[in-house]
Image (tube, rainbow, N blue to C red; front, side, top):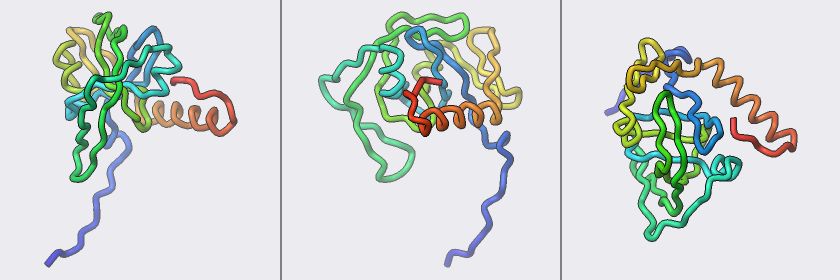
Length: 160
């Protein structure tokens, strides 16, 4: 029989992921670095505001999330300029996926190609030998409040 336990409370800093801005097609994208993701993705909204040309895939690809029964499919992709730190890729492929909260998610493929290391202790994203500070939880919260205010105020949604 299952007994009950309390879920531990953790500080925002302790729970925070590593995210920062990445230049995608000439525009700063609020980007999550997710080492558990086997895909790199951009949101349709960010693709639109950054004037990134979206292409239909020949064959849809299943998108399996980390929970049982959570399935979607990837129907679109882009090849676009991605700049991060001292690395530039002119035609990097990204899936176009409905992403919550972020403009883009860069997973294991991007991190392997660009030589990215995540340093949670120092809150750094390291590319080659360049250390880039990830956004602090309060910086992310301010960014998200600003987005919500623009959206609720009837203004066009802007990326970051």
